[in-house]
Length: 129
Ligand code: HEC
Image: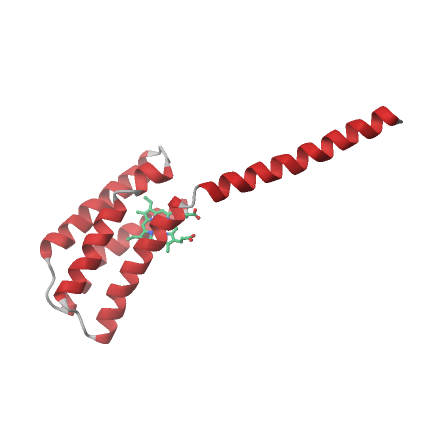
């Protein structure tokens, strides 16, 4: 009886310990979500600017540059080693690079510059989110 109780106690402690470790691991790497939230913020600001018809080229360029540099964190931070994933991440960087180079000076130009970017966000989300 006593041995059975000790085994049960051991199991319970093991389960609680495992759950704690899993939680700690999830909390320890907030980066994947942080990278995505950061990009979501900057895309949101660009969309708001278009909606408000106030596309200050300096602000627009700031958001595009932040997007380009944040996108370069996707591959190292997610650590997903599948070709479809890394291809989408690379395509996102390429398209953001082009958007930065285009330096859009009107809302119509901003909309045109971020359209292919949004398509790449969607392409990866469909498969991996
Ligand atoms: C190469 C793949 C990939 C690309 C490209 C990508 N994402 Fe994501 N995104 C993901 C994955 C995977 C998740 C789910 C992350 C999770 O739940 O841990 C995600 C989640 C998100 C989230 C929700 C974050 C959360 O807290 O769960 C937002 C917002 C987001 N992405 C924005 C964007 C924007 C904006 C772009 C384009 C500029 C983009 N993503 C491009 C893979 C990608």
